[in-house]
Amino acid sequence: MALVTEEFWDQGDFVARSAGMPDVPRVQLPHPVAGSGAAAMRKIAAELAPSIVAALRGTS
Amino acid sequence: MRLLEAVDEAAAVERLHDLGCTDGLPVVVPTPERVARFVLASGLDGDAVIGEMGPLGGVATVEQISVNAVMAGCLPDHLAVVLAAVRAVCHPEFDLAEMQSTTHCTAPLIVVHGPVVDFCSIASGFGALGPGHRANAAIGRALRLCMMNIGGARPGVSDMALLGHGGKFTACLGESPELSPWGPMHVDHGFAAEESAVTVVGTEPPHSVIFVGDADDPSSVERLLDSLARVIANTGSNNAHFRAGVVTVVLNPDHAAVLDAAGLSRAAVRSELASRATNPRGDLAQVNPAFAGDGSPDDPIPAVRDPADLVVLVAGGPGLYSVVLPSWGAGPHRNRAVHERIDLDHACEVPGAPRS
Image 1 (tube, chains in turn red, blue):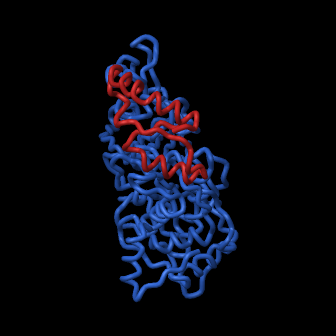
Image 2 (image 1 turned 60 degrees about the vertical axis):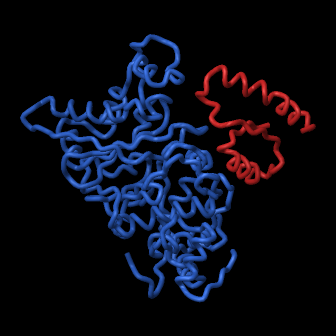
Image 3 (image 1 turned 30 degrees about the vertical axis):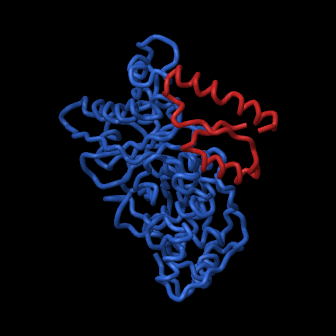
């Protein structure tokens, strides 16, 4: 399970293919997350938690 | 190996640009005949595997490395150096896949040691990092093209350097024992003086360090050591904040002579610089609190963990300026410097090929 910001989404695809795991589950985050402040991070987490859980369960 | 066709050399170069096989500059077209001469010069089988290059995980064979060396403008005599450099970056401690993928501006610097420096006409003095020296430019560029075409590094997709820099095109210099008071550096790493070797280390671009000596001032050497240490510990560098990674110091011959005249060996210089290159924790916290850690603001935080994390060599012309090249300092092995023997036992002269 990988969390990848939108600016690095293509790199995530590249690494997944190079590692022989093109379908490895990953969820896209807005960019940037680092340095965006605690409130922004909580908001992102709340919005994305369901899709992260779904990806981990394989139901996304 | 995929064979492409084109109506002429100019069209072939454009095709290679279109396929993303170049560094953005024109290349020498790697025709089968040119590549075969390089493989012959290596004395090795074209299918011989030198290493695996990340992040793509491409297998670097002698033939594939030869293709990139031809494209870079190398001569067949340069190939042994390129092969050693590729072998070095494929060493796990170099952290190649991570280094190619990072947003930092790190690039491999190749330092060439031993008799091959003269044999291949690799420059050590004025402007050794270029431009203007064919072997330096071509050898460093060959490694970069291998990192792109075999390792799969592409800007914004797999090479995530936010800006990049000129040293990502090529960065190679020779170490000249004549310029250094301390003898050849590769001997310190277990090689015989008559052997040839490369040291490959991930670096930022050079940061200039100005110092004017004064033979009448006994504290002159202290000023030089402090000048270098302050640049090593500059609070914009990863090394200062991560307290990890290798820092390369390239002393010009005049500055090296000042240190030697004070009785300092290369090992003593490394120790002095490591002990002086510190920042108070409070200074680091002021600019990047996330990395500062817990403790007193007065704690001295070293930029290098150990004197062995300093690569100190002598190169360039004599004068006022030496350089410090910080590093990324991340990756599972903190992107160590790797020293690799240049295998000249198998290399052979190619009849009719231009010589260095």
